[in-house]
Image (cartoon, rainbow, N blue to C red):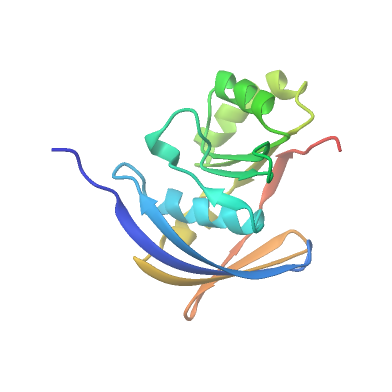
Length: 182
């Protein structure tokens, strides 16, 4: 019998001083049986970093042709494609062809560094692609904040990120490995 997803209820308050975005999102997040708490928290952080009224969590791990998060225009055009982890060169190429902007949030320490060394030269032609890495220490600390019912506060200023749940605070420094040309 197939395992079912675990449901997480998240109240995500975003205070992004860099983009002047201040909003609270009530999210119901399905955590796939193969998804770790670390990945779930990276997904929520990626959502916060790109928060917008039309940003949506997708089916993610359970489907191959969707990113983890996307934003569509009112006419259905894919404006933003957000992927987590270490996608193949083929997935990166396809994503960049489908969306106006693609952001890959990678994590995993040495594994992520090896992945980037392997594919970075093939990404130079994509001026709509950003690659941002989270350190292994940061994501492991985020993982400790995970619970089935969370009130998550994310403050962003000058590229620095502070994530808090109750009295626990984690500081995250996104490392931009590739930025868009526009």
